[in-house]
Length: 182
Image (cartoon, rainbow, N blue to C red; front, side, top):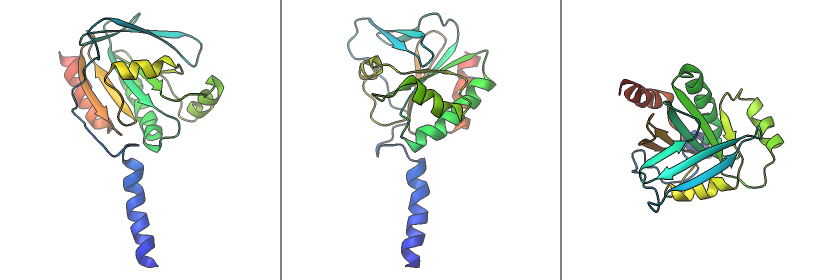
């Protein structure tokens, strides 16, 4: 009996901090599917829109100029995603003049009110989308194999890094500082 309890207590934290999928690829190269320009208009939970343009190896958020962009694909039911929300709040606050964090919900049938209620407990200070077009965007970025998945994009719209699974703040900060020095 003690062995079962010990085994469960050992495995549970590992599962909690693992991505919500068994595959992890921290340095996976991102390829935009099809080289033709694609436009996406994602509704936010605050009833505005984020317009995203994909073209070859660029991802451009319209109306956001000269800032680093973190696109975070997540769900509300994923434990690692919830941990990462807190990390992204810290990143957005620490680099508010240099970075834009956008949470992209990959879930259907969630109302904006439900999402807002969940995010209140995390004091979310960044934009979050709730749009069926998020699935098309994810597909155009080569698909999302696990959640959370985060894309770090430089000030010119060039992909810098793709993270699959929970990303430590220290790792994000190292990469953000590299981009700020460019």
